[in-house]
Image (cartoon, rainbow, N blue to C red; front, side):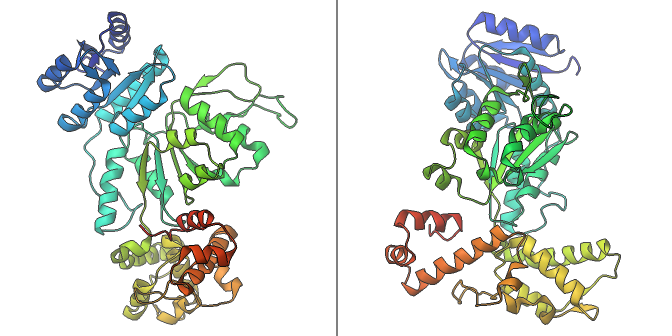
Length: 457
């Protein structure tokens, strides 16, 4: 850091101002101090700062007033809010309003220094561009809008809950957010929460000390420590058992973890992103997911659109994936006929981009000429849906259909979707009668429909 860096401290308590000023001065950051909202706004209008630290409670307003003013007048300036200890609601509200991060009183100086370093790194990044490399391919309006949102969120420390159907690209969105943010040079760790055995979960997340349990032959650092300085992406977070949810919530709130067998908590500097294809609100309502953890993870929600909602990207994605397949297999690039492309554009892709990739990989393997034709796609095994056809699949061999999906859970969800849709269409979308026919409660049917993306707006 250099002497050109500056910070604005907003607080009406002289002791706090002095503590923050001393700490930042030792980091070669010059500080200006305001003791109320009016003075702070005046300084923000007159001078450019690299970071702003504001107390939540001010004589003539609140820290939220500062956050909103900065969002409107100098949105690239990172602002952190200082809250009373344990006031999680206020912290979350400030993050939703656009705050970079928050600190709790009494201020932990190590956490303060880490926050300031992260904020300065974010402030010194160039302005985001709309294009997102090739990780999130597409030129449809919905993808361009998603790209802009990723660029904005990449600079923040706020947890982001990424929603979307299986195969839609949630991990790619998380990786793009990491790569376009100040943590790009640090690790990005993606973990499928549903794939970790329950008895190993705490050790995987928080680590353990040698000899802390049978089989612990050496120290293990855990995911939070391994991702230090970077991003931890919790995929399928809804699959975490309740006891692990409690421990995860504490780690996020305290910004520290204790390894199994460890004597003290160790602070971590990690940004948390999470995703699931399930409806977390429905999981909360059913008692399978803690509301307080949902509240902390769902500070900002980002939805990844299904492929059927951006059909104009299908051709671009198809050519990109075919070129990638040819390169991976060291083969000559295959062409695809206009008729085959037309069939792909008509298809609904229940498995989204991942299904498109699987379809093309199979066609690439089976094609006997240098051009993929309609029959090479084998879409006859999956109903090709149009706007005028009912959203149901034809009865096909289960094994052939199962090959279209990444795992049996996705396949079973697809079957469940067929059954519910069949009942609803037969009964002209009378949900009460459909629930009775299917032997479930009306509420259960609603949750199942939401989970599968069938609920009407």
